[in-house]
Amino acid sequence: MNSSTQPTLRPGAGSAPPSVSIVVPVYNEARRITESLEILWRFFNARGEQPEILVVDDGSTDDTVVRAERFAADHPGV
Image: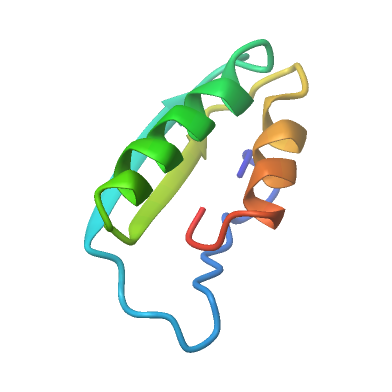
């Protein structure tokens, strides 16, 4: 998710294809990335949608990538 690693799409095994794709550009967003992703996730899931959330990091120097990866570990499609 940063310039030294490639993003990984991890759709849930056997899951339906995403009904919507959201691209979230980030740069040094560690303070708010988890809450922002949670809001997106809940919004689409409350409507029965299968979101694909792509976090695109532009070389953050804080913990943005680590926090986004932590969130993604528990949320298929992120």
